Amino acid sequence: MFNLIKMNLYRMSRAVSTWVMAIVAVLFGILQFSSLKLMLDDPLNMFNGSGTDMLGYTVLNGVRTVATFLQNSNVLIILAIFVVMFTNAEHKCGFDKNIIGITKHKWKQTLARWISAVIGMTCIIALGYATMLGLSALFINNFAFGSVAAMFKAFGLMYLSAVTFSAIFFFFTTLFNNSVGGVVASLIISLGILNLFEMLMDLLVKKVVSDPKVLPSDFFYDSVFIKLDLESLTTKAVMIFVATSVIYIAVTLGGSMLLQQKRDVK
Image (cartoon, rainbow, N blue to C red; front, side, top):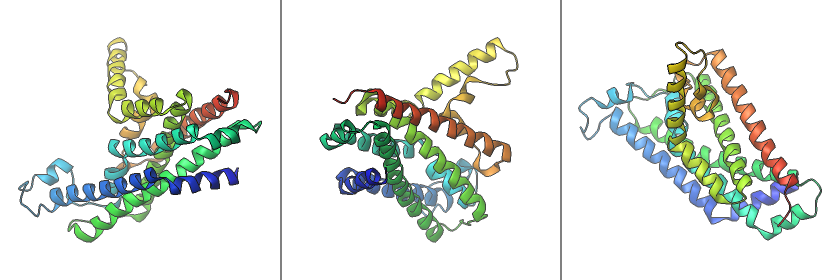
C-alpha cells in the first residue's frame, strides 16, 4: 500500500496538471484577498462604506478567512477538477491497469489512489489558503486573528468536508470509469443545481407536513456543508457534521473499492 501511494505521488508530482491546479489555487487565494481588501478597506472608494454591509462584518478574523476560502463553491470546483483529472489519468494509465491485473486485492489500488489524491488536494488547499491568509494579515487594515483555536477548529471541519467531497467525486469517476461522472457530479453540486432540487423537495415536504422536524436537504452533504455556521459552532453541530462526513466517506469510498474489486480489468 505504501509503495503504491509513493508511486502515485511521484507521478502526480511530475504531472503538469498538478502544478496548474496549484497555481489556480494560489491565484484564487489572491483574488479572494483582493475582494476582501476592496470591500473592507475600500482603498479606491468604490463602496462608500457599503462593502462591510454586504459582507456582514467590519473586521476580518481567522474563522472568516476559513469560511471565505474553503466554504466556497469555487474551491469545490478546483478540488473536483484535480481529483477527477488525477483519478481519470490513473484509470487510463496502462501501468496502473497492469498493477490492478496482477493482484487479488484490487481495492488496495483504489484506496491508494484516493489517499494520494487527498494528499495532493491537501497541498493545493494549503497553498491557496496560506496565500489568502498571509496577504490578508499583512495588508488588510481591519484584520485580527481572533481565537486561533476557533480558526483551526473551523479549518479542520472545512478540511474534513473537502476530504468528503473528494471521496464523492472519486466515487462517480470510478463508477463511470472516466472523467465524465466526476465532472458532472462536481458541477451539479458546485453550481447549486442539486441544492435547487433539495429546496424543491423541502417545499414539497412543508406542504404535506405543517412543521417537519427533518427535511430532505438535511441528508444531502452539500446542504450540510453550506449550512454549517463556522462562527457559532456548537458541540452538537460539530458532532453531527463530523458523523455525516464520516458516513459519506465510508459509503462513497467503500463503494469505489467494491466497484474496483468486482470489475473486470480492461
